[in-house]
Image (tube, rainbow, N blue to C red):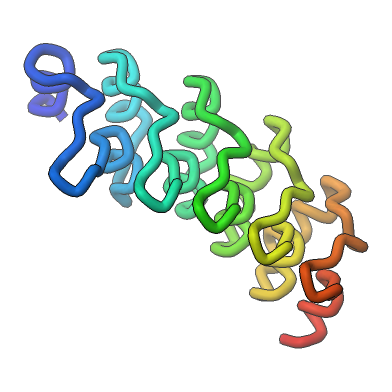
Length: 165
């Protein structure tokens, strides 16, 4: 952590990329042991929390996939884009639904995430949770009154997805 502090605050632009186009902030957020203090340090050094990788995934996508509600809240406090979509049209809430990350989903919804946003296949987060059998997020989305009638591009509802499991 101290080494990161020295580099982030004194040596290098915190918005630098490696040869593959990976941003420092995204690398830190994608690390399984990522803690608020590391991201806070980068944010204080003026790292851009809205950067995305080549597939359009942001730091918010990364931490939502690990169910880190506290870090999700921190990123949103730093003005991360709540409904940013990757190249497949998936938001952080879609990722939380896919990975059954109820705490992250709850924080995203409380912050105003679009509960009925659809990806490029026409899947809403509720459809994704139903299709995967992810009951934790399914209940969070139902409690938030996600649209149970919303259908995908083939006319299938979340009920259809659950029945096909």
